[in-house]
Length: 214
Image (cartoon, rainbow, N blue to C red; front, side, top):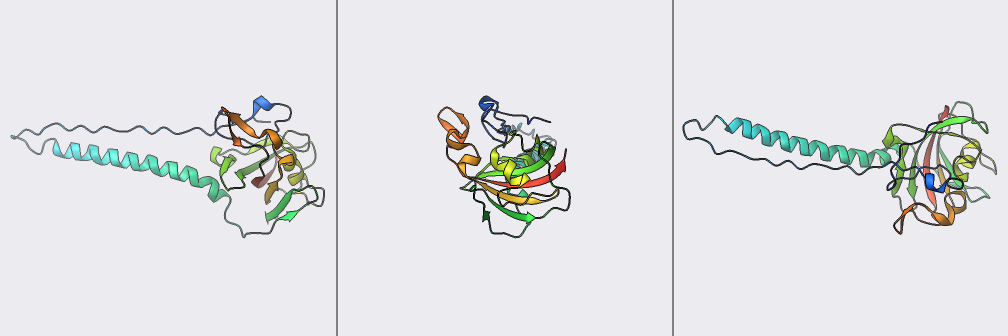
């Protein structure tokens, strides 16, 4: 089972905090973009065209570099949103536990078995729609053992099924809405310096793609 590379300040994955509160996984790092200072030398009257083209090229390269960095940053921010699109909207069904689900795509592979090591991609959002974590942005799915408390309760129930919820099949994509008691509860997650990435008593939304057995 793999652990996610983490940073203390940015993201929270569905790994359960009940046993290891200090071990919350976070890995979204702020990008730092360097500014480029362009200096130009005065041209000599005897050869006015000697430095003109190199200076122009340097300016174009600098502008091109800055544009490229900005574009990559925008693409990174949009990636989590794009990962949740591509399927028709569906209506959430609420189970008696309070967990709500909606299948965007029913898989064709086998269902997960309790205790099995599986892989899943996900995008986690607050009720406001703000993305707090995405395995797609890391380019690596979450690997964990299902049904044994390694992830928050809503994930175990939402993937394994039960309480009126059908089990997910490998290859399937499902939206899960977790009430606080099936997520991070009154403690929240990613709390530091008086603020939390996931505030206490938060309802969470997850777009889950069950890849299959790890």
